[in-house]
Image (cartoon, rainbow over all chains, first blue to last red; front, side, top):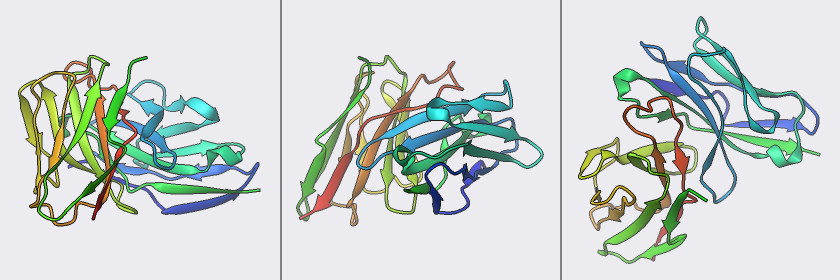
Length: 114
Length: 115
């Protein structure tokens, strides 16, 4: 069965610093991978997706993620954090064996300090 | 603009009462989903439907029921059998079969509380 692990329930950075949110997945077949962002009292919005094309995926708001099959990872990065990046971030995986129903990680709360 | 509309935004339930959460989409998506979100637990799948008049239980279906009579609509009923219904409920849709790598679109959620 597919699964997702997000290391760190909270990540704290200073404004202008590098953002790194970690995601490791488990899938016995080629996965589809997604990162979503959630602001308070709202639904999730797609940041970016990996669907077996380029391993480095660029998303909205300056975020990007790299698919590393050997490490079963799909970490999310942004070179310079803004205050507006403070939110909850979710990694999700889907694959054929799971009927393409996504499995979500528990989320990482990004805190940005001035 | 296409999207998913959830209503109401806030809902209160009395003991022994059933309540229904509405979810409507105009994205022409085949698949629809209901998730429950609790702090620190991420999203847990309650029910999903990949085609009209068919739906499947997710990981935490006990105490919930759904229907899918129209492509655009996927209402969720929280029954009195659900003993801990206080949570944030999210509805989502995606293209469905034949569009397997497409991400989900989410509504803005309904927050359900016990009176």
